[in-house]
Image (cartoon, rainbow, N blue to C red):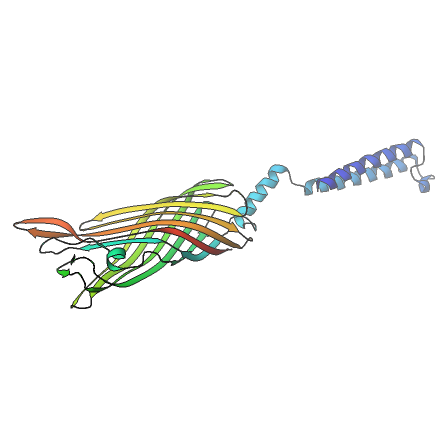
Length: 332
């Protein structure tokens, strides 16, 4: 457009020089020799005015730099361009974490209980893969709704290598124990970008983390079994950071934490995550991530020891995992 405007200006200058040259020689238009002396000059002036009008129209068609920047900003806000920030993104994939699972169930009579490690004591697999799905909805420039969910089931059968005190029961060495540990989670949070720049942003998030998990064990040789189930809808708070070095690459990180202690219940959730995404096209991307997660719940029991009553952890479960993952996703 700039070249068109420059060309029009040069055309106007050439037209003006031609009119002045022809007027000075008395031959502006060959078919107007018998007209009044001012007719030629009037015709020439009309041609100059027409050229000026054309130039003005072309100039108006080209927005000023600040005008163009404002227009681009409005376009980005109303409908993201092909390589800009999407309105909606969804991704699914698998993580390959290392697990550490522990639990203890004490006796209400003696206050005794064994800390059981499900991987080493009961044979639960330490290395697995989990299916995960994540989604992000952009409500505005600074406002997002993010959600993620995953499910993991593990079970094992193993002969005990040591004696375990589990609640009111004693599991002796050599017993064959069937055990399981299942967990399902749903994380929904609102994110507000405190700082939003073209290449990076920083935000705060608040939401709910709903974790439902169950654990249990059963001895085959004796009539013994115990199952514990918990569902925890806990609030969660954290921070998130994103960096975009180019239109195809985006790096993201987040940290979330919450602790709750109410009456006889205590719980803690902590999570660290990082993701590097590469956009193969404006709509399709792949990503490599790493995630660390910890959840702990405790149920306090009041135990009578002699004539005294003492609060102790009646049931406790801890679960940790950490490992890499791969995701594929779409943006809209």
